[in-house]
Image 1: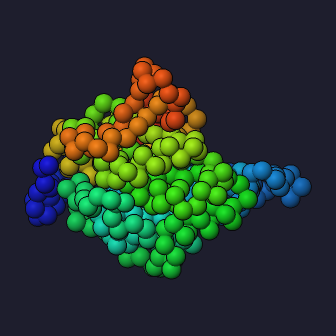
Image 2: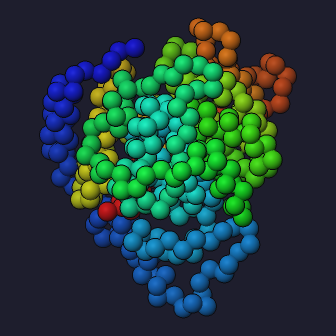
Image 3: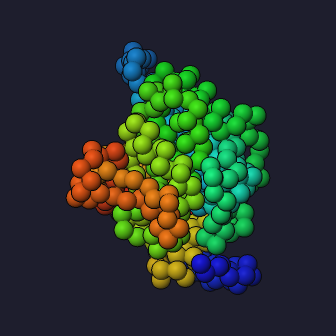
Length: 387
Ligand code: BDR
Ligand code: CA
């Protein structure tokens, strides 16, 4: 595994790339009339002008949440409750932002796990992202510090020593809740009037523990939308993707938990590139959030340029959120998928039975392709929702 270069060298390269990108950033983006921010404001105004009798009626199945107009969406949008289980992480940070931005989702809470960095860092990073976005009302619970049975392994060669290097994020204004991740998951799932969708974007340790200790709550889970695995390629080893490799025993438990599971594998996320040429779209928003995420993406891009020669970064984790709000964005096919837990060579490989050779029914909806331009527009629009 190639390590990242010294932080001085890295800063230099980031600075050079910023100058290049700044030159390209001469066009106004979404803040102009008719752009996404303007459309959000217009929608707010329209909602405010509507008589009370014309407002969306209260429904029994779909929970209706009043979202304030400052976030850009009118009140009374039907939402699907979700819990994010993550290890921020640059792409996890964008997954959090996207989930909070979209009116179709209501983020009940965030649980953290060791993965891209130790769990203290990933918890702090989740809280820093929420602080930046002005959403410290979302409860965050710290989860597993290590996998179920394996030794821990962090991805600081990709995300830096903090797990979220490269940008000037505010310090966390609040701390995590006193409960652990599994306790928070159980409390939120139990208390939700609607079935909850889990969105794990790190190693699956917390979710596997939840599945094992709270079987009675599994019928309350609508779906588990996972970023992880691969059909053919690997990124941590030649055989396996990082999240599944990190805790293969946990992944095996979750994939076979009996609830609907969707897997967004590397074949999809490697096609979900946020190109460096698109980074100025965030900066020209003229917001702190836009600047921070532009800096995060520049840092994230360095690893991907060195490893793959790409001119951009795959925003793996945000795809697991995006597929929930944009039907058809990700092409999916049901397959039987099993996780390799015995071999060292192929540890954590997600064995996708493309031709039904095992004669077993499908257990996972596997992503196979993504509409990249639509995905990037979704992300830019989401960033534009925050100050
Ligand atoms: C996954 O590994 C992590 O580094 C990313 O955050 C993503 O969840 C991609 O393999
Ligand atoms: Ca992640």
